[in-house]
Image (tube, rainbow, N blue to C red; front, side):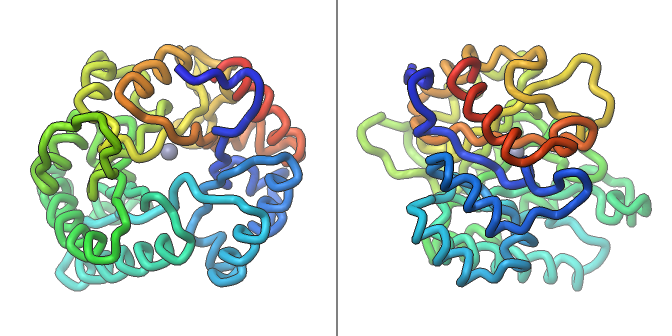
Length: 300
Ligand code: ZN
């Protein structure tokens, strides 16, 4: 397992972690400068932040600082109430793939969606298997284009508490079943294999509790493990979406899980992704980033 204690070469910052400080939106350009000042080598930005800053401008700024991406957030949200909605989702995912390509992201992260409208409290239907079917078809359609342009898609399984509104793919096993169905491939021989066209983004917040986690990480192997997101699970958790903990403040065995991921061949970034309305978003971004670096070295 890699030694993270001496530097933060493999730390990436998901820009949601420092975007909403004290209720103020921090522009992406400023976040990139803050990361550059600390020698952080990678970030994972969100589409709306990139759109607000300007895609070309963000690409140039990243290049000037020598900062890469550990992923691009995000595509997905495939299910819809009708054919027009399904088509709109595919069009939007195509644009997301193009943006990811411009930013030279290693993958586009997919939060696949669930019951359409549920996020706004108005689900258009309640048939979760229908939603899962639409997710499958949406990924299959997007994958054809993603392959054409060479942009790997990373399915992020979300904790089942978000099965109604954000993602109806809820375990690593379920995500890998989709990968095997839509992107069948031979076993990973471990020798310089290219990333799969379809893989997974493993976010410990969503999967840490899964009794099959170790087994499914081994099954994923290096070609399917496209991204690794860290934070911590606070006990008790006060808000289902926005009370993620800083690494070391919760109950997740971070080093143990990173050991499993690295044993499977993953050698990429540990991307810190913390939605924390009640704590870290109330602090100055500089303090949050300094803490991320310290915890990356000590507990990740
Ligand atoms: Zn994540």
